[in-house]
Length: 169
Ligand code: ADP
Image (cartoon, rainbow, N blue to C red; front, side):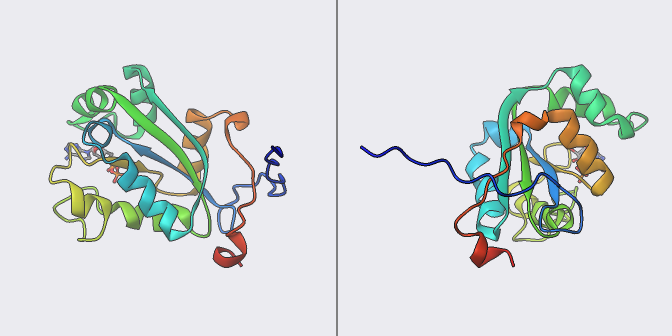
């Protein structure tokens, strides 16, 4: 049998916001994993045209969860949030494409699922702010920070998809 050829690694590592290589960090939280919604989350981003460039399942320590949500450490719900986020496996991903940071947030929907529009992941699949399925970076600085916190550069895959000429131009 002929060997499958690896895709040419032509896409430069940039991740620069505002370009077609913009990248964001998306995590499926423990409730999303427990409830069997991993495929639902991936499908929304994949069908939209975004490219998955990194993915791993892991269970965050509470220390890691505290770091990830450090900006919220003064909030009354912080302790519960940390316990929730570290309570079981999460699926960490980096998605790439035009405007993926902001559009990714729209795909997730509002933080409070009861205010999230129908058609969004949170609007369609959950009812509690404390169990809202998914995380997504909220801007270029947090995307850069969170991708660096959850992934090494070696875990991020630069590759060209054959569909890119139909999706990206
Ligand atoms: P987002 O995840 O939409 O960026 P925030 O950064 O404001 O929202 O909050 C981070 C996470 O903290 C939320 O996704 C949610 O899991 C949790 N959270 C926010 N507000 C509350 C709240 N009032 N009660 C419980 N959990 C909350």
